[in-house]
Image (cartoon, rainbow, N blue to C red):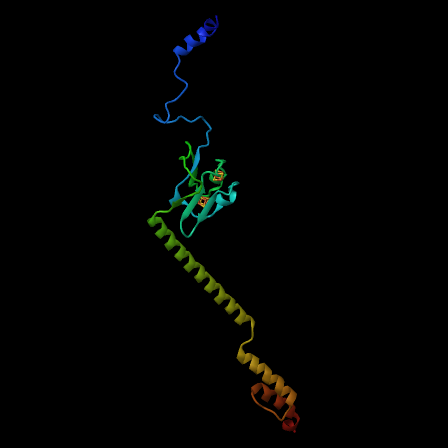
Length: 191
Ligand code: SF4
Ligand code: SF4
């Protein structure tokens, strides 16, 4: 009796394709919206660290100078924040599960030697530009300071003039002083 109860369902399923897959002998078919795992195009990474700062699990590490990007896949929850935040769009969520492993630990991706060399040259050029800009700013500041301050000669002249004024008619050391002296002796000259 119970066999007859399930017979219509069994007959229907005879004409339907199987619901199981032959994975791993055939490629797996992932459901729509499956997050998969994070992959990186390492040569496009600029080492800004935005992904590291946005990761809620603290599972990423970046070394700009060494040109490396590392992930501990056992800690990643595939939230996709790092992908969202990457300014170079070199991270993406890829369908498929990560490769199984037997122990925890960081997987590190390193830039190609060509890209590392390009980065080194770019860094050097950037440092040169920064040094030149700094030197130009310092020179400009020194120029502005010099323009705002009286020159050594002017300062000496001012000091002398002040000294001559205090000493009176008997001391004449330069033209300014002489002018003052002449002014003091004027009544005699007129007489
Ligand atoms: S997907 Fe989420 S958990 Fe995984 S590395 Fe990116 S930010 Fe971190
Ligand atoms: S956010 Fe993108 S460019 Fe910046 S360090 Fe991470 S992977 Fe590299």
